[in-house]
Amino acid sequence: MSLPVLVAVMVAATAAGVVAERHWHEGAERRSRGTMSLLLTWVLPVVYLVLVSRVHVDLTLVSGLIAGYAAVGIAGVLAWFFASRVLHLPRATVGAVVLAVIVTNTGYFGLPLVRTVLGGDELGPAVAWDSLVASPTLFVAAFAVGAAFGAGRGHGEEAAEAEAESRLAAFLKNPLLWAALLGLLLPWDAPDWAGEVAQDVVIAVLPVGFFVVGVQLSAQGQDGSILRDERGRLISPEVGLVIVLRLVVAPLVVVVASVVALDLPPGMLLQAAAPTGLNGMLVAHRFGLDFRPVAASIVWTTAIMTLGVVVVTLVG
Image 1 (cartoon, rainbow, N blue to C red):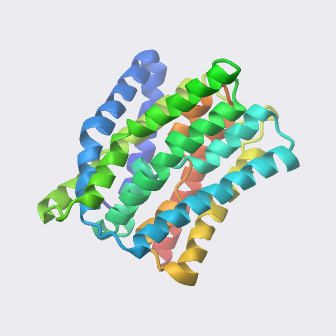
Image 2 (image 1 turned 45 degrees about the vertical axis):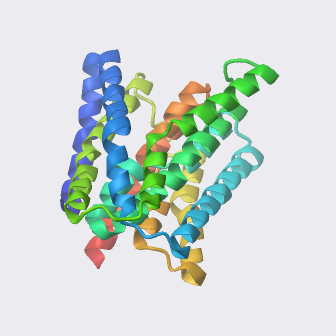
């Protein structure tokens, strides 16, 4: 699939999700989540196992994963500092800004983009990043941010323990994490034909992911103003902050580490610049955070990242 076709599919799938939600409302949400659950449970773990099994564990791979966590940590702390100390945003909005920075779409966006722009050989490192950096960040750090800044479901020590147990359970039940780890531990590589099929599946799931994005954006923005703040601005200061941290600062940390010492695979470098992920909005909704900055960040960071890749590809 060429890059223009990939972009067209993303736009069409998102628009289809919006239309479906407006026609079927909760039915569209329920079916889209059921489809995502099916993919996450039965399809993508096999894909991750195959692709990661073809990656050889070495110092470069491990260093790349460490650099990924460093980038997430630095960007997340900066998001908290500027949102709370400089912009003086409400607590629920501060948490949302942090979520929009640390939760990334390295799966349904990053992997097809890597396959299209860099080729199938870079999918292994990209999958390792998605499963061993992005997924733990979601199930551990993002849930912790939601619990810390949101209204939550209760107060006191018992509520905190319940949230900690919930985060741990979500982390341990993540099939993509275990599939990737198993792939790294296998003493043999998956055959070439399996790798080719897995690459095709990566591309095939892209419209499903963006269909769900459209459904969720429509569901959360019934008043038509999900991309605007209370002053009617398309890019509010908090969303601008997310754009800078997510698309500039976080990938810059990884690029600098690669140039100075690590020489990381291009697939990892592209994953470091992945846009804000849909799951950030779901976490914000669960913990009562301000989901609007997250939703707007999903749209803007995805659009800017896509446009940037298109321009770079056309230029050379």
